[in-house]
Every structure is written in structure tokens, then in C-alpha cells.
Image 1 (cartoon, rainbow, N blue to C red):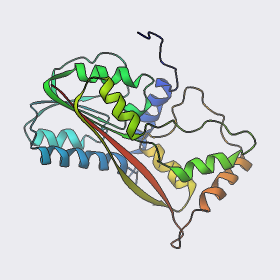
Image 2 (cartoon, rainbow, N blue to C red; image 1 turned 135 degrees about the horizontal axis):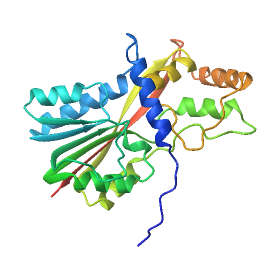
Image 3 (spheres, rainbow, N blue to C red; image 1 turned 90 degrees about the vertical axis):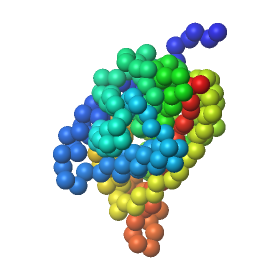
Amino acid sequence: MDNRAPPRIFSRQRRKAGFRRALVRQSQRDAARYVVDDMVEDVLDRLEFMRFEPARVLVIGDWTGTLALSLRGRRSQVEEANVRTLDEERPLDGGPYDLIVSLASLGRVNDLPGALLHLRSALAEGGMLIASLIGAGSLANLRRAMIAAEPDRPAARMHPLVDNAAASALMQRALFKRQVVDSRSLEVAFRSLDRLVSDLRDQGLTSSLANAAPPLGKAALENARAAFLTARNDQDRVLENFEILTLTGWKD
């Protein structure tokens, strides 16, 4: 067995700081929240389609509280995990749960296989995990702009992302049964790079890489802004895509 520690790609401290900032920004009336809203709606649609009515539920990552409110309306007993203090790479307290939902959270843990194993261990027999995360293929225009910002010495500024095949393999490795991984696209239009970055900050989706790159200088930032706008359509908007992966698996 390979007992080596997983590489440290992400910083829990930077991740928590991003969430704290997002909660403050959400007090503003026009703060963006479309990524988590899309994930919440998708989870509710899946549960309705499957006619699954869990008695005990753990919700991770829904800082809007919408999912928990909806599930309580369906008479589920719901616990909400504080993503600023929860360490998904350790065994979870509580449980067993009939359903665990993780929203936009698992994509930034260093030991994703271990986190999935801990989530499975916290499920009751016959329980289900639904985990949504931003997957590979997302934010292509932003990635291109970051490369154009400093073409001679590009720095890592964006997260590595999980693709469908890797997610399926991880679910199998974590011993989930009847596991399914699917994806969908959430397309959002932006007038500028600054607006996209602001939306990401609103939603706690900015970088939490352990080795943080230095801030872009003025010239590099202008390069990035100009490169981003080269993808404008005839409505003077840049269409950016969030590829949402949803991992579903059962503990049988």
C-alpha cells in the first residue's frame, strides 16, 4: 500500500479566508451566487426524480442555506457543515447519514480519495452521496487571459480541475456502488475580466493554491484584460463556461 502523504496543492487557510470574504460580499444586494444556486437546484431535481426521501442529511458547502431549508420542508433532519472549519480530509463527526451533499467543496482538497472515503464512511447503509464540483473545461477564457498576462514567466494562478474520467475512477476507488458521474455546462456572459473575478470572489471560488502567485502588475493586468476581451461576441460579451461535475454514489 502507498502510504505517502498526498501533495499539498491547496491551502486550507486561503480557502477559509475566501469563504469568509464571500460571506461578507454576499451581504451586498447584487452579489453573484449563480454557481451554488445551480447546484442546489440540480440536487433537488435529482432527489425528486429518484423519489429519495432521506431522514438524516448532511449538507456541506451551501452557504446560502437554501438546500437545507428545502430539505427541511420535506421533513428531513438536516445538519449543515461549516466549510470554514470542516476538514474533509479527516473522518466526519456525526452520522450515519442517509444523504450527504457536498457543493463546490471537494475540488479544493489535497486528498480527494481520502475525503471521498470519509464521506462514504459517514453514510448509513443504503445512503447516498451527491457531490458537485467545478470540473475540467471550466473558465477557458480566464485561463487564456492568465497565460497572456505574463507570457514570458507564467505563474500558476488557477486550480487543477477534475475531469469526468478521473472522478469516476475516484468514486470506484472509494468503494461507492452504483456510482455515476455526469456533467453539465453553466454559461455566463461577462462584459469584462474584472466582473468575472468579482463574481468568483462573491462565491468563494478564487484561488486557494498553497503556493500563491504574486499579484499581477499593472501591465500584466492590462494584458489579461485585453486577452479576455478578444473572445467578445456580437453582443460585446465574453461567454464563460462553468463545467459542473456531479458525483453520485451509494453505500450498499
